Image 1 (spheres, rainbow, N blue to C red):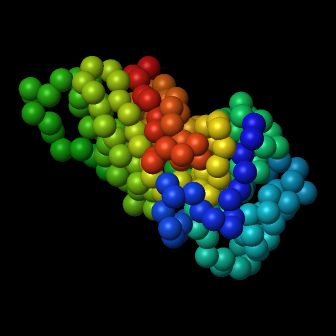
Image 2 (image 1 turned 180 degrees about the vertical axis):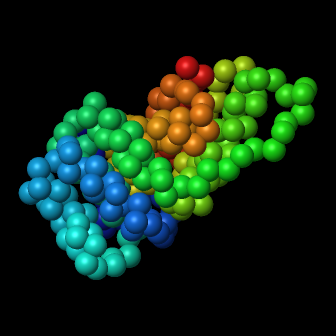
Image 3 (image 1 turned 135 degrees about the vertical axis):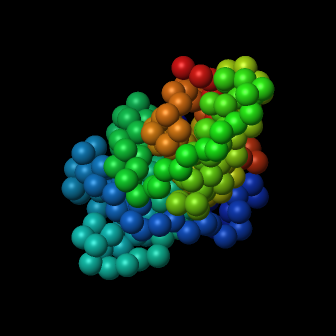
Length: 208
């Protein structure tokens, strides 16, 4: 895969200022990463992402943004490969799930179809996730069993450019988030990525 970090000039499709990322969430993802990377690889990925090694111990309180998190995730993906990176994403959300409060949707009108009710639950779940990690997941469904999810802050690809989709870790994370937060099982495939010049990362979703 050809994926290059563009540090001198940010591609125009990314926000000029990267969103902040909660340190508590990232530390739990680091714990998950230790099951996929050797200790030296974790430290190397942190150094490349310009994240203080204190993030490993909890001794410090570094301020993180999605550009740093994206760099760490791309280093992890490069080291373990796309298939394991997808599994990492799922495991990483499972690790952080206790930090995300769950809510109950109010009763919906009887006229709303069963599939639309499920997608409304997914939309609510993404709203919860947005509040916790500073993301901007937007759910748009097309009726029936298909939907698209968009995210335009570059959570796991910020600042990168290439010819291939880059958000493998976030795909796994998103799929597990939908399952745990909404109780809806969906197959999720990334179809567009900001790393390739798209205005947002996009996932095509279908009820499983």
